[in-house]
Image (cartoon, rainbow, N blue to C red; front, side):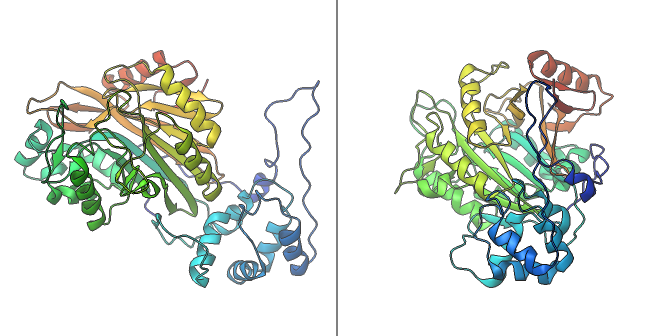
Amino acid sequence: MRKKASRFSLALICVACLAFTGCLGQTEGTNTNVEEKKEPEKIKIKDLSQAWDAILNKSTKEFIGGHPIDEAFLSFVTAKYGNSVIEEIASYAYFDTPEIWYQLTGKSIHVLWYDYCKETGIQNYSFDNTYLLDDNESTSPNEIVIDLAGDLTLAENVSTTVFMDQQINGIEDCFSQDLLDEMRSADLMIINNEFAFTDRGEALEGKAYTFRGNPSRVGLIKELGVDLVSLANNHVYDYGEIGLLDTLDTLEGDSIPYVGAGRNLNQAVTPVYFIVGGRKIAICAATQIERTFTYTKEATEDSPGVLKCLHPELFCQEIAMAKTNADYVIVYPHWGTEGNANYGTDQAALARKFVDAGADVVIGGHTHCLQTIEYMDDIPIYYSLGNYYFSVSAQSPADYNTGLAQIRIQPDGGIDCFFIPCLYSDGVTSLLNSEDKAFSDIINSLNKLSKTAVLDSHGHVTKQ
């Protein structure tokens, strides 16, 4: 697994399994007038036979991740990790959290089931859209770092691409070295691909801005350390169906996963899963845009397009389905009003539905400017990351604030959230130092706009 190399890294949190046992089943706070939820008791396991019986016949559905656990699976896990491990795991079978699997094996129940199905060749398990980012066999839990950026374009004839083509080192000269290090060292790096990879087709008639980049530029995505691109936006269809299909072919040809669009609705709606650091993480993406125009076609059962969420029922079904198959679900919507630093009631209403469906984090884009971070229940909502490396014409854009959303999954399963401020200026997006005035200005502006979240002087996001 790739390790964080930037100054934004935290020391790994060491959480012992004994400490973990005290956390299961707890409720927040204490109310003497309300009966506390009783924590389930561990099962006393005497031997391996009793352990297998407990897991097969006494486990909650949540504890086994909803998988059809059988003797063959338990034999697989026992052979790999030993009798004592499976016996300790079995003692938690009454609990409604499967975290103990990860704490004792270094892999979640979802990843263990994936490994088992992969090794045995079980036919009813789908490996589609699942990417293994490491082959970590360590049983020591590690921090997992996920970085997400906003809109990026490699479109021809816009100022950012023209600038890039004039640089000795190409795209590497368009980002500060410490920002490149940050993107490349993240365990999972995600961007919004706000253009079509095509040199064919015609620009959509009547659309003010249309963007396409030569397919030969696709390798630049990997140079940035990107592991996944979202195509759920309002520019991937700028050159019609042929432009979208060329984009899909181009990304697939360079083995770059994408989400939020496809050759048909089934492909467009399917989440992308990553297995990293012993956890399984789902990414779901859809676009609310356009809300009034229909330049960007929505995928149907037999035609290509993007996945839309203006009416979010189908997208919420996708989120709920992803929740049953993964340890964490990150929802990446394209929404909001361009140029408005205040998120809208439409975004908040959609966020509510995403959270109710099972999102663990929601990270938005499209507005071309930063919007603040809020908490809905205990779920962080980054309303918009704005532009990351983006311009609309040959004229260089004015300096703009941008940044990375950073999600850190801790060894105990908890999520820490950060915002890493960056600045675009004169063709270059740079990582800001926490001592820079621009860094504190961005943090302060986000704090002023937020009602429920607070960012500290290092970009750490917590619920008020």
